[in-house]
Length: 381
Image (cartoon, rainbow, N blue to C red; front, top):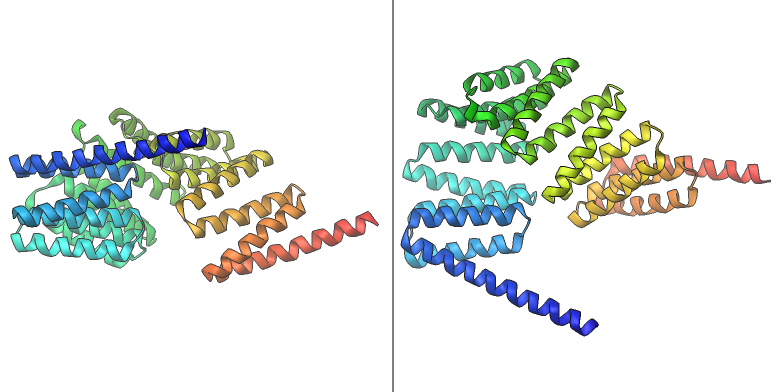
């Protein structure tokens, strides 16, 4: 039986390899026939693989295009696409420095050929990476440069998207009124029925600012409008984001059943998408909601599932947070031995990561557990 399974796995790997070889050959033929359409086809396949986290296949597709470009002397746009694609891949993996280097190279190439709209798109993407890496001033500078180009080119869609991103920088910098102004301007630029995606994104971010300003009813209305638009255009990522925000709004407002419903829907969508990181984050939110409802076992299971996903992702900081949450849950459930087991693992990981803040938290938990052990010992005498 075991030999049969091994043979099946080996045959499956050969089949996949042959299929991928055929795909590469197909892309080469497409580029030979019509370079522009071939690049569009290559880009679509790369995005398909990237969205499904098939990283090794993405890297091979990139290598093939780079090699084909050199041998066939394709236009510079092919190399620009490769550099931008490499930047997207490194961004997805959280390799900020590598992603920034790729986009800077692509930006230099685009400036050499004078393609202003592509320059604005790359500046906007570079701003996104700076934003994700926490470099807000650099993100703002990139967005502002992109905004100037989009405005001079009369590119309203690009202008609206950059205004939304710029609003995020202002929001995270605590400049809420400026953030709100950016989102509202983006909404004014794109009110046409064909631009539901931009309107929905602007509404989500506007809702987040209204939430921070304590305007709960207005924030809820913005989120619900965004959710309806994302549903109309079939954007599952957008729906999941809004449901997460709406759930957090309800959670903070003490509307625990409403929060639970939103987080469950959010989790279901992220499971459909195969997005492990978002699943782990949503499971944490679910755990908090269950805990506040007094449903401790369900809260524990959510944290436990989150830990599994963090480990599969290789997210050690997320794994550390999950271990500490599980320790606290087991302590509350009265399972002191299990709590200590999670705490021991958390301590080892925190030391490895050099996370002094979490080490301090672990020391406090250790002291509390020791006190509980002493209380139990005294009660047993």
